[in-house]
Length: 204
Image (cartoon, rainbow, N blue to C red):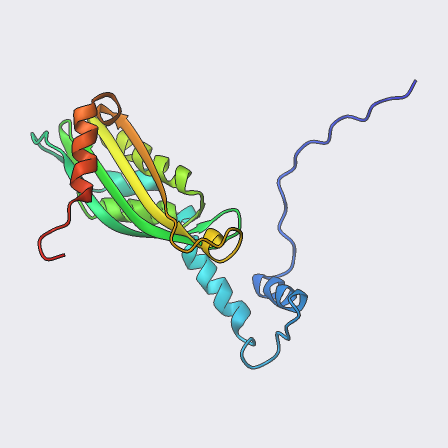
């Protein structure tokens, strides 16, 4: 009787013994370049340093970041931090996407230091990402840590994987949102948030 082989278990990929710089030199060779020429001699080291910075979010704890600046208050109106600049790398092509993040929440006894919200955005954006996941990670972390009445997050971004390759559309933007708690359940709250992030300050 013919036996059917058991399905191979999915194993976690192991690191090779090659250094990051050696791998980058191999990529340059495969692209048809000479990694020893003057303009490329230091490129592997530069790329390594850049990638460590652009993916440093893997070494940071979002909940620990947020818990370091929690304050007890009686304020229960909407708090908005909008137009937060965001730069990340698409996990599909490792090309940049960039744009603005708008975050709002309604406190329920606690608020977070305003500077922590841009830092939370940066933490999650410094990982290989897709815009949809980035949006929900920001919202869910705020909801989990400070337990507000609700959270709303909107991201507007342009993706170089669409602009430089593929469909090559230069003026298209992707908009994603995550609404939790009262932002999801109450149309008036959601509409107020969306209206406020469209407003421009005087002189802008």
